[in-house]
Amino acid sequence: MPKDLSLSALLDFYGPFLSEKQRNLLHHYYNEDLSLSEIAENEQITRQGVRDLIKRGELQLKKYEEECGWCQNVLALQSAIDSDKSETEKLDAIKDIVNKF
Image (cartoon, rainbow, N blue to C red; front, side):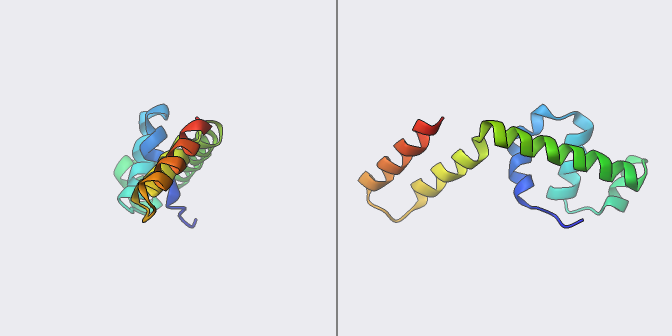
């Protein structure tokens, strides 16, 4: 199962909306880079159980982002702030992003 590391950012934003178990498993998988087998052993559940919970959590995180777009907007704001553009161009970009909220 290849890792989509953008899910780590989504976990930062929407993690509190997941169950504690899902949040912990996703944290171990994406932020601590543990394998499914390692997580299963640590949590004393099956590897398949870990995979299922992670998959469900991933779907929930993607759904939250699709509906809210907080992560994408915050990353866009950070990019606008960090850009080499003039202050006026930065402010225009920030206004455009904020108006999407």
